[in-house]
Image (cartoon, helix red, strand yellow):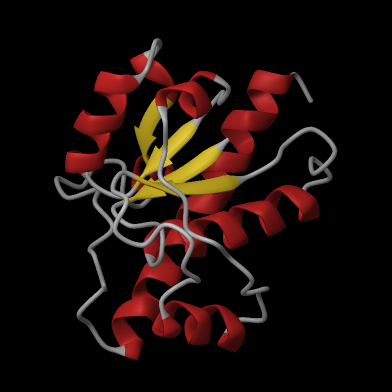
Length: 155
């Protein structure tokens, strides 16, 4: 599975680390690999944004990361893609052979299901607190992602 945002340096690297740990803690790391990508190529080859690194570090997550851009071939190999916002949803679903495999990350958050705004805001120009909020939104959605994948795997 993969997490996708714009440049693969803020939201999706945070989601990748949070979701991979959630799958490990659920005993599913043998069946699920979490990757992350950007829809754009602006930051390919770079590490995560320094504020994303700080947010991950404060929460005890690993921080190693190299930004990549999502390709149609990579997308075809993924069973589930969680995206940060509706722009990504439209863009990635348009690339996907099976658009139903692409969902907003916050659609897995039980407190966010009925909310009109299920997007994870872009913290790129924001403060450390904005990156912490992205981390909190991802943590809130992680159990729902794990349970959806567990059900799909029949475990």
